[in-house]
Amino acid sequence: MTDNLASLCKRAADLVLSFPKSTRMRVVSHYDADGITSAGIICSALYAKGYDFHATLMRNPFSKGLDRLKNENNDCIVFSDMGSGQIDDIEHLNCPVIILDHHQHIRTETQKKVIQINANLCGIDGNYEACGASLSYAFAIALDQRNESLAPLAIAGMMGDKQYIGGIRGYNREIVESAVNKGIVKKNIGAKLAGITLAESLSTSIDPYYKGLSGKDEEVKNFLKKLGIDSSIKIEDLDEKQRRTLHSYLLYLLVKNGCQKNIIDIAIRERYSSEKFGELEQFADLLDACGKNGARSLGLSLCLGDTQTFHEAKTVEKDYKQKILSSLLNLENDGIHEMNSFRYFYSDDSSLGGVIGGVAVNYIFDEKKALFSLARKDDEIHVSCRGNQMLVKKGLDLGSAMKLIGEGLKGHGGGHKIAAGATIGINQEKEFLEKVGALLSHQLKVSA
Image (cartoon, rainbow, N blue to C red; front, side, top):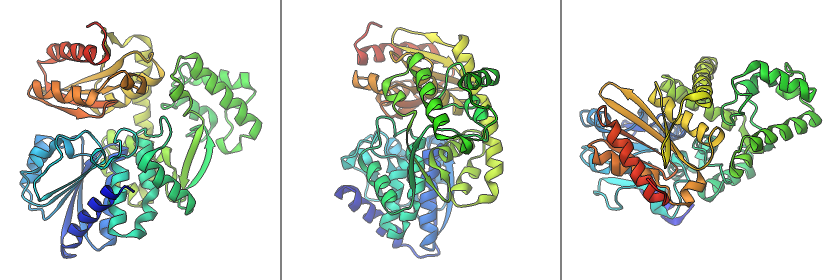
């Protein structure tokens, strides 16, 4: 842990511990896998110290959510996986605030009552080297070293935030190596196979998305027949020869479909599991499904150890996966709008748009353009956008683009260079698309 991160976390921990145990701490986090694991870590750490908590998982802490907080009588609020982009509003809250964030920040200096712990201000790249759950884990360790047992949740957050692409590095790597060395998590190498049978695993696979197999039961059965593998075989019953054969052909499919090398490299890779949460990327997928399919509290309860809700969560995930697969199949066929410097599509659900875009940009389309999802809701348009590491190296910065354009249209925006979002007025779509085209063309030095 960097000295700056450690000292800031100690300061935040000292603030919490200065309150009497009768204090109920307010926890606000994002509603995706990284945000849910972040909240799980913080709530677990607070409860272990004798504090009650009131947790809320938000899509974004913009005006409506922050207005609700202003009307509450809170002693202390902890924001995780969000907050740095909303400093101006957060400083108007009437209590001390701790921010644990890895997204782009507005400014470095804050009012005395706000402790901003942002990875990017601690010499850690918030795009690749630390996520919300990583920083929440650092805070939990500062509260009590025994919170090392929460490392599986931190690793699940990394998996949910896709920070394994290009290899786990930075502060994330410190957490993983320590957890492996201490036996808190186990490590093995393999493909992500989530399902009872092999056929189910492949036909419902979203990330990786196997173009020609995902969402297509009959094609999967024919594929496995050609490999000489029984489609009804259970994952754990595959022998070593079958696994090697399967892995080779899955990699071949990704190469054939034109996936980038860094995406192909993560198809067969190191995977981590814990006794309590199982395989941690699969656990992150389960949390993401709960958060984005209307069951946010269910996801948090899983992080807090409520095993009774597992089967209910799996039902939510099954429904969620089917929605994603249907949308991806539609994009494969005829659901995309091409612009000079980006692509975009329409989504019925803003929560799903970013997920669909993140998968499609890596597995369906070529690497030359970022992909935007637009979802109309009431009097707003919710935008999610995704790029790739090649585009970022060429100058793409979706986070700054969404902040500049979103605020310029009297809305909101921000995020990472590679993934971001915005909210604009319902009648501003045409102007928004024009501004995106111009700004991304400037970033990538291509003609508008």
